[in-house]
Length: 212
Image (cartoon, rainbow, N blue to C red; front, side, top):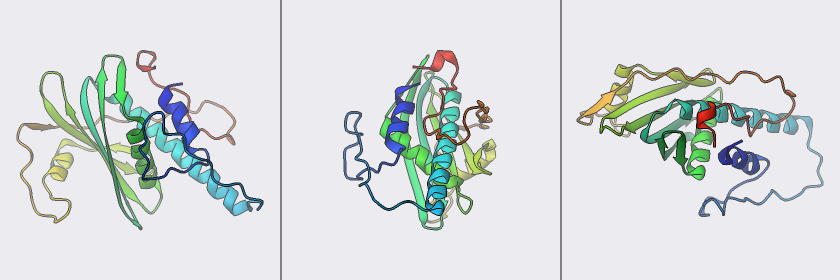
């Protein structure tokens, strides 16, 4: 299991961050919620289980997407449009051969945004802009549909770059940016484990040469 996956397990199991904290590697040890003598009712228990399942699913999607990224520097932007408003989180990561270098706090926030976009009344997307070692700049994207990441065609991602998200005014696409057809994000296969157990830290299903 990678450090990131183990960290996700530790931080999502009933814990809550202070948004003002500096979430560095050594500081992301969030305090557990205060103990309560109240016995949770069935609705609360079901809601907690559903939330964990949703975060598990979003984590699977995030890890599967990272597996698709080739060598280079990548900027990942996740957006969720919810009834409460629009959430946007981004991260920078680098792929060098077998290694993936990323900030775990950023990755966690992107994963939570993907989870928010998976809620039935929400929509969302993930866009990746890549700087390849040969200097080529490219962009591709995925829409969050039916609880998973669905690849967008090159014209669709070009259209996204051609509109000002705040005003709706047309924009000229960045010069030299190549728009690519996104790859299909494979779903994680069922492992036959206890279906009642939380999978907030899913098994490392990346190819052997990409595991830490």
